Image 1 (cartoon, rainbow, N blue to C red):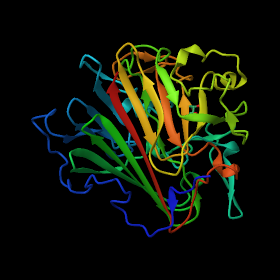
Image 2 (cartoon, rainbow, N blue to C red; image 1 turned 135 degrees about the horizontal axis):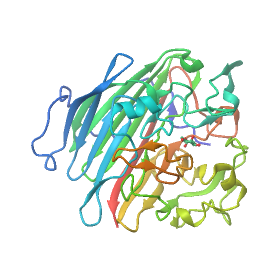
Image 3 (cartoon, rainbow, N blue to C red; image 1 turned 90 degrees about the horizontal axis):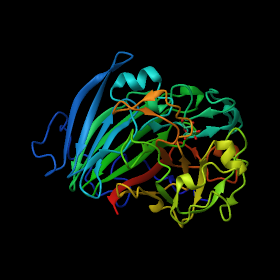
Image 4 (cartoon, rainbow, N blue to C red; image 1 turned 180 degrees about the vertical axis):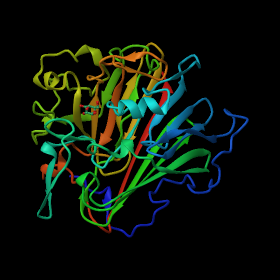
Length: 393
Ligand code: GLA
């Protein structure tokens, strides 16, 4: 089982991964700068986006060629992603809200675009034991704990520093979660760097350290609709997952602990398959999830970046390829969207209007010794990278 993303080397805080040659850090002081030639040179601009609990929130716009991404310091939320279709027409392909109030007032129950921590996905009954101590987390997804508890990383205001270099532009976000926050042990220092590459990629580098043994599972919860947010369902999108196995769940979406083969089931996405072809199946797992809401075990060797998923929209021609260093990916088909949330463009989001592909360690890992570990100890460094690469067919 892979544990190699947690390494015990000393803790240099920058330029950590081989391959991260993006010269992060050279762009200090760029906040507020803007490029008059968006589309020519990578640029990053900053604007005030309101406040929450007395804390100012900023919105950064990162542009590189015909690709533009907006990120909020609230929750590290990816608010919009504009990318061209096969004819060069731009659309915003991620679900979100128009303004900060949309996220704060609704509490963003679907976690649109947000960074998730300390523990992405579910922990059974919100309980785990580490080094002989049992911790009880908030039960916010009855009877389990979901996505870090009542006030997870998705609802925190992060400190932001723009970074540039190597033809890319990025934003480094930092959040220090105090010992005991949401009942998790240890002071957890987390840095997440979003880098927008010239070829329409969003690279996310996660980095975390702790001063006491704890459990961590970081991800981003962006939803995608490659036809454009608010334009309908993703039933016609084709999905391919590089996974021969998945972690079956019980009725509360907690893994049973088994790694089952996908072969011969509606969970088999080894070949590109339309999502709508099987998401109404009577297969027990699909019934439990009201559709797809499961973790796939990625077929991979070693701990480097490997392709996990590819999504394509035959109508627009847009594609999304996801590479990650993580061992698993949660494919969630937007099953709980019920028409009550109104998105960035003003339309309501209904069931299946977007899909999330959350690169991660497996759900409830702290309670399954056979899953790759999510334990992080003092002196270890959590490093994880995921790249969302957009293109067209
Ligand atoms: C995750 C879960 C889903 C749902 C969404 C948020 O993807 O697996 O069951 O809770 O978050 O709506």
